[in-house]
Image 1 (cartoon, rainbow, N blue to C red):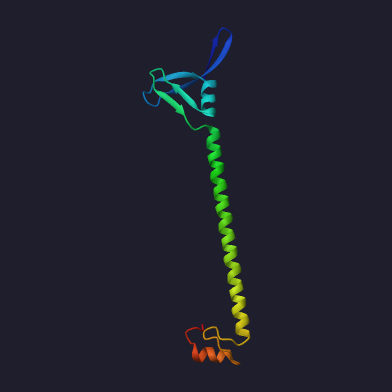
Image 2 (cartoon, rainbow, N blue to C red):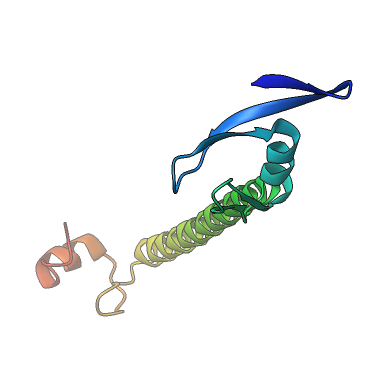
Length: 127
């Protein structure tokens, strides 16, 4: 960075190189800062256009939006897992209640000795 004095006015210049032609030249630092921040275009001395379509604010907004989407997706996944867990617990409780009442889960018949019935009639269903 150089400082140039023009009629008692101090201007900071930033040395840049055109990405297209390679010409090295100086641009007012304030101009580049504003272009990077708010977007816009600049031309090198040979005439090649430099552009800042996406501003810093746009990049931050995109990043924030992506993080919000990810957080929402994680919350939805957690909610689905919680619902699945709750339904599995309900099913286990229902089957345990039926088994304690002596009701066979395979053939829906009631037996006083359900364990013996399961071993003799439903060997594949017992662990």
